[in-house]
Length: 374
Ligand SMILES: Cc1cc2nc3c(=O)[nH]c(=O)nc-3n(C[C@H](O)[C@H](O)[C@H](O)COP(=O)(O)O)c2cc1C
Ligand SMILES: CCCCCCC(=O)C(=O)O
Image (cartoon, rainbow, N blue to C red; front, side, top):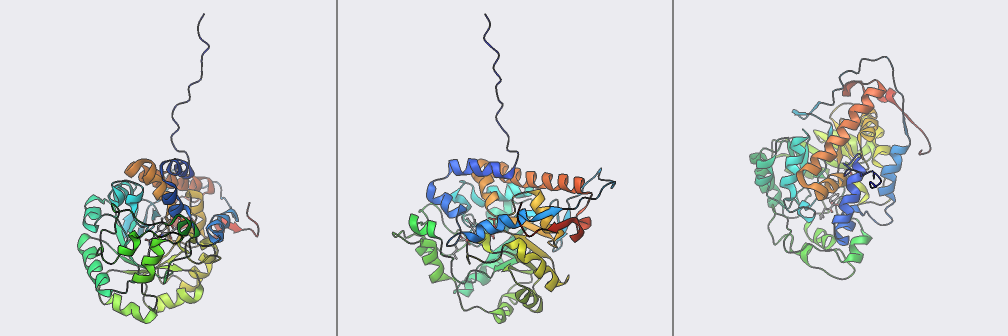
């Protein structure tokens, strides 16, 4: 007698960006997972970022030649194979031993932009040496301004093409998961581009509070205003990008103060709970900017169809935060490239079926915004 034939399932390759989330969740310790996954207070804005995409329906055009769909674009002078880039996120060595060096390899392989956090856990020079694609450097406004001046100089020397100032974090959001976990950085993970004394508080665990919030209270300057931007401008010839704008008023001020690009973002729901979903804020920002500079978006983007929706509502590009960390945790550089490639393939597929063969053809007529999410 022969044994009954059994169907053997081959190992499943990730089919959707969300598949990387499951693997990352299995791999990471609970406090690290909570740090990545969590948001501020009730985490309403984290959920709102996702739900906003559910209100978009697509208006496909037919009998358009979509034999080639081109996801390529140009942003602040850099050629990109995809409008889907990597948002700045702190401490990549929390999820993979190679940290941001692996992220740079993955982003480069996908032809994507990588925005490196001021809290990168590898040096800018090591990251730049591994990068095949464009890098931007992200800053929080530290009280010790001389560190910012030094960092923008190093960033330019390493080949970074823009400075991103995050403007939605004069203090850290109240992240209850991190407080509950007494989240603090271990000795092996540090902000590799900052003086160790500046970030010492981020390593001091205490019951019931986040060491990162304690560090932020000590290190970040909450008194900064629009008039201080001139100081930063004077320290670098690189384009200046403002990240964390959610209103028409601030978008207009950003243009008046010479911003070279704006990132519509609520920090992935990690700062002001009940802030608008990024996608909901996009149209008013795009209208206020009126073409004066590119507008990017992050927050809740989980694939190519979300990207298509954001582009249709006026974004020039989108950035992924948590999904890149899922890819990095799951499979290092290959996981980062996997996330970006999957999302880009999904975008090209949506473009074909929606009859929009290049990014310029994705305009507001490509979407309808419904009152309710589906
Ligand atoms: C673990 C983690 C760390 C982050 N660190 C930074 C940071 O250092 N600088 C910054 O400007 N934003 C930071 N962000 C916010 C992201 O840049 C981005 O705005 C957000 O993650 C986008 O939402 P998404 O995660 O839903 O894609 C961080 C987000 C996460 C999840
Ligand atoms: C100013 C302290 C930053 C903490 C690390 C970054 C982060 O979690 C976030 O921006 O979100």
